[in-house]
Amino acid sequence: MPLNEKVVSYTVTVLKNEIVPYTRVIRLTTESGHRVFLAFEPDPRANWLEVAGAYSNVFLDAPEFDRTYHLLQTESPVYFTAFALLGIAAYNLSTGEELPGEGPGDDDALVDLAARMREAAASSD
Image (tube, rainbow, N blue to C red; front, side, top):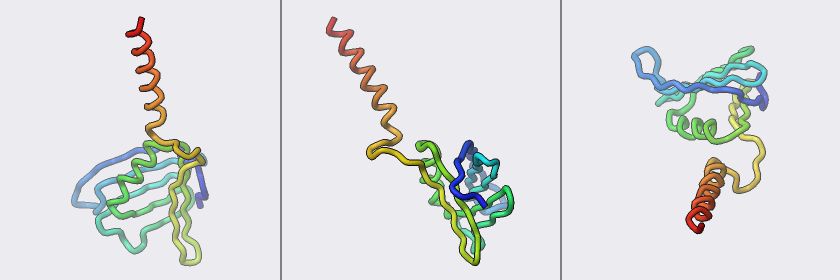
């Protein structure tokens, strides 16, 4: 049962076929080697979470794909939790602690600022 395990890698698949109802899949691997299969379906099934040993299968609403993928693309570290105990099913994908105002654009903004400063210094010479 993965509890707040750090995600170390992920892959994304976009598919369409007549075999499965989902059209997007994200596969995660955690620090302990736990493998996670996130499938995004138009009509999620009632039994949406399966946790067995080193594997978790999570079937989510299709609209949740964009924000899940965005979280994986822009945040680090990301942590995964899933459990199904005593009739309670829970899945969580969360970020590590960040300072307020931190986000995906911060690194790019700093690089852009440095480039503009260099250009301004070069043009004033």
